[in-house]
Length: 216
Image (tube, rainbow, N blue to C red):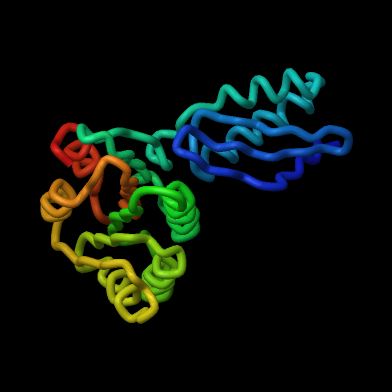
């Protein structure tokens, strides 16, 4: 019989995520030194696997808490100015990007600005417009401070965000990762958090590398 693990809440902080979990007879907080849905899912799978292997609750929790960063999925990096950079270039679906945007918003709820850098999603031709349009509107609802959209293929994220009159943030459409870098290096402060995501069709790994080594 599969072990049932119920997640009551997941709290994302700059220092890591805290997963509030329970089973039929136990309840606990599971802290991990990582953030984002991918890391949380791996930690929960580890917890479930340890319990199914017969390990006691405390041992299973301790081993699940060893979960570290998942490369390219809200992977925490630092710029030379001290700003937090989330490398989410491995996100490949609209749902993954949406969840990462929610993490970005949560991390900056109390301090700092949230900056999202997005490329084109890997969507089917039929869903391409709706997927990009929906993310633009979600960015507004999450109150992301700054949106930088890279490439003409992702333009509907920029367009949709701009159509939401209630938004106090700002959206920019740039042609390349180089242009995005030029914008970011003059605008990012130490308390800000940047998310680089939506890189399935728009190569953004080089932007992450430049932000880590440059003056952003």
